[in-house]
Image (cartoon, rainbow over all chains, first blue to last red; front, side, top):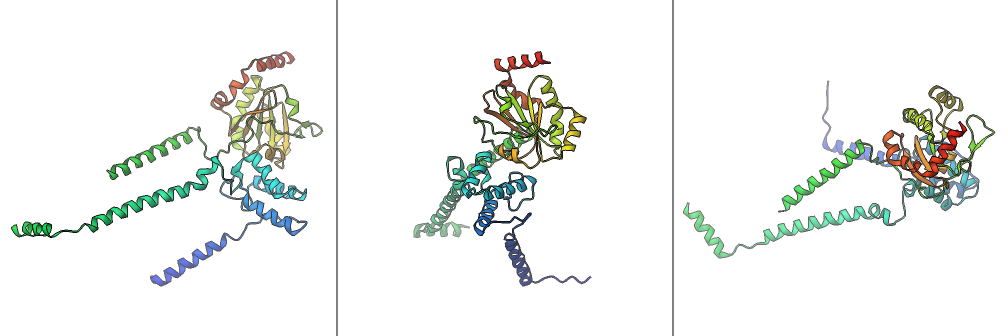
Length: 161
Length: 189
């Protein structure tokens, strides 16, 4: 067997390429069924809604990405409601009234979702403070100037040996 | 000093982690649980045909004046098979349970009932999730408790066990209204 060790450059290239591929694959939206839309606006609304509503079975997927049976039925419900002339807001309201804010990938900011929205910021601020105080402490240690007297003392201590 | 802070916060985090894991293990906490929006609100309608008689429409209003359970199940759901025996027991105790057969084949649903017994006074047939969505159902089994005024009082996602029954549902069936309901049920037997 003739195994060639890839050079660092090659490795970097491969990694960058695979990262790019992963990034773009998120854009490829899974489509499970096709609907006939009366107009472009309706199609746009449908796509926005299935993208923004959460599948409640596989909870980390939106309706557009999920092939769970409930997600299929929820997509169909969204389509039916749009066909019957419901607005986007009305459909979101319908879902939220039944499944709560959790059904939305972007829940409204209110007391129950406060931590969800601002938790990361708060953690970031705490981490920032910790790093800041740590760096400052290091700096004050480094900045301590050794005065002449201390230097003499150190020398005499060393000379004693 | 700061070393102790780090150590103590580490142990606090481990403690929280252990408590959560323990509660998940004992079934007291389910991170996937979605709290229902219906507690204290009027129960939604059912309005789908009966599994056994398509000309009959199963309705929420039919149950008015009674404390009852609404149980969502399907033959495809192993947890539903598991809770079935206990539902039969509840039926024997006089607890009225309306079933909703969800996303299923009528023939399969009927054969499961024939094989395992029927704990339901009525079974709505909901192959396309229309009722399930109206009730905010996201899995099976799920069970709602509706009071005599038609309000949703409690809900449980997952199979009903004797423990769940004792903790969540039993007390609502101990009111005088329910015992009189039970008496009339027994008289009619």
